[in-house]
Image 1 (cartoon, one colour):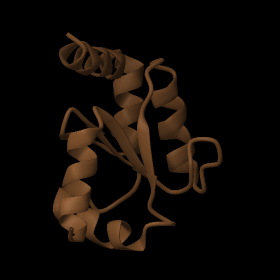
Image 2 (cartoon, rainbow, N blue to C red):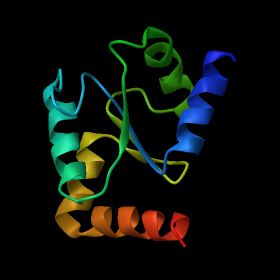
Image 3 (cartoon, one colour):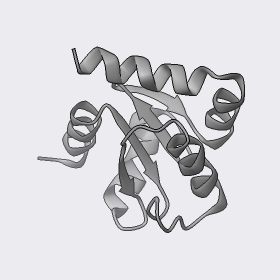
Image 4 (spheres, one colour):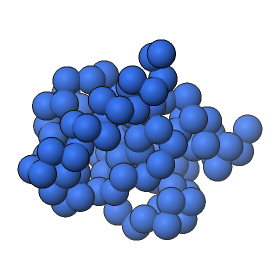
Length: 108
């Protein structure tokens, strides 16, 4: 499995996945910390990939996603965006709705 196939499998196999620097318990950058805090406030489980530990993913995901920075939040196979988009969506209520809709869709 090449790195793009690995990324595609991770996105397909996880309803909610965040590619971040560090872990949810120990983020390694402020943007990842804010994004995880916002995501956690929605109350659903999510997967994560530490791009500092996965150099191939760190190098290839920005090209695959056409999104240059981390964190990257993916919900139901679609790129949501990075920290500022996540925080905006949290503030206006769309993040929780997006996540709960995705969970409901896959738990019927």
